[in-house]
Image (cartoon, rainbow, N blue to C red):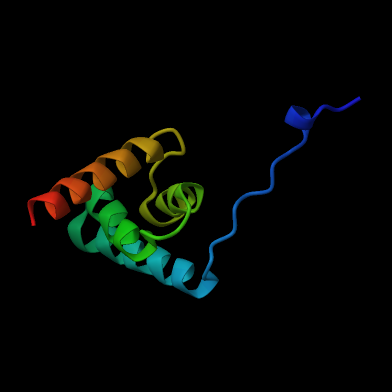
Length: 89
């Protein structure tokens, strides 16, 4: 018998799939232009800032070629940096 925790979880869907695809394109362009996964992740985050964390992490993997295990680190760092910038004005 399967318990609730054993059932596979459906991945979160973006609120705006068109915006999600555009964020992936922007991330890939930033990756090529700057050669930096961090720059690509920042570009993606700026577009998808209002999306659920899981959606943004998936975009990092797909658009910035960040590993699934590394994407939460990028997410946390970018979010913290933006929060500090906004607090300073």
